[in-house]
Length: 427
Image (cartoon, rainbow, N blue to C red; front, side, top):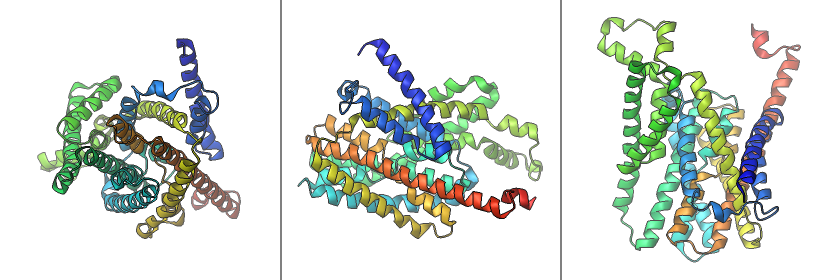
């Protein structure tokens, strides 16, 4: 493919991404569906304009950068107070859904492959919801901050669990030995080392930004800093994506940390509230900067789901049937979340049960497994990419009906209030 054609495709994909996002806001159809369709059409199944094999060298880097930046961008919308309230629910929902889904998927895959380790590896890979799907969807839906924090934390947690347990199964297959103590210590280091590094470098960044008064000139410096802390976390045995999320939470809540620090170091200010000027000064992430990061996340997400569409292969009937079975099982098992969301309104519970799409983690694990020669059966690879696509489709349909019912209930409320919204009526 010549350079001009590549540039043309990039431009058209970005334009279609914006069109798809607009469509989600207007007609409630999630943009990921259109992006998957675009990739499928461009790939070998229809037009054969792009050969997925030519992207093999850059695919690991692309998936890593996409996961890292989506976690960072998503964490900028997490309010620390809401996170503190929702962290227990986020961890409970995340662990429960991950374990149940992983075991169910492993059992189905074991029916088509006699290797229990391969079955467990793919089960873990497909056990967690995708932050690449969840975070952009949440940014386009108006929900309370606590629920946003719970669902963002769940997607981050299960992405890491999928990668950790998936990679562990790969190493078990390669080395043919499993030391449970080493596995548990690895999981602990991935979380705690990464969380500590992300938070520590976050506080350092707040100090540097306020002292240097960089203002709106530091966008690219922040991105370089995130990449640097990702490298440091991975080098020291942590998870880079979790470090990026921890960093984002700290700098997004800079005003809270500075206010606490001032009250500790200067007791006479204990009962004094910050004025408007101080609040603006100590908010190190401006709204303009957040918008910039959202644009980068949009760009990465757009090409990630187009890439998944390219990899989709429907020629193997068995892979399609197994993929359908796994996807339906994931959809049904997602309803187990209702056990932990009883305190929320019905609409919020429906939303939680609607968000179960798979994405970056299984794609990354498959790439690692292929590189180490652990997976040699193409059918298993086809199953994974089909499940990613099918869960995105099914989850998108449930989100569509959720937004449709939400809009319908809002219109009904307006009609009952004599043409005024409930907010207008109350005022």
